[in-house]
Length: 190
Image: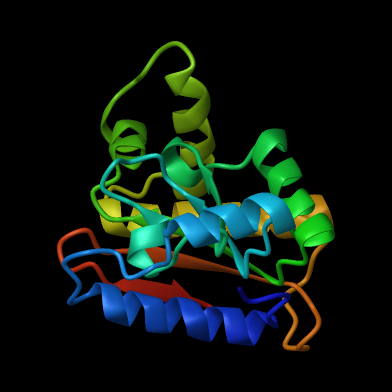
């Protein structure tokens, strides 16, 4: 298991994992009984934090060819930020030593679509209201998804007082968009 990879090393590992995923028919990540036991007794050492949408078609561990204990995944519809997500990121960085945080949006996002084309009620409205802050009047769903990712990255930086750094020992935050049809991930500003 990898311990405390630098942000650059973690980003390279994510990109390589996504390349494997593009032609995979099964997840090559280690999900063996041995790794389950090891992470149970020795704890977790994820190399990256992934903040992803709850969409059932977006499976970060598969998308990045990762196994048990490799990614610290936070999922919420529309990959929006609130104190729960921020606290989870802070925990992963401070206590688990993660050096890379990736906000992973995706094309054909139902939450983004709802923010553009509908007026949801109830708790869903709290999600679409956050997305509307990011997208303004944007009507193109892919562009809106990118804007939504950029806002979440900005909220993380501002709320946790974090800055992007190229230092090997610093924390890096970047956005990415997953293409559901092809399986590829486009990293934004990484």
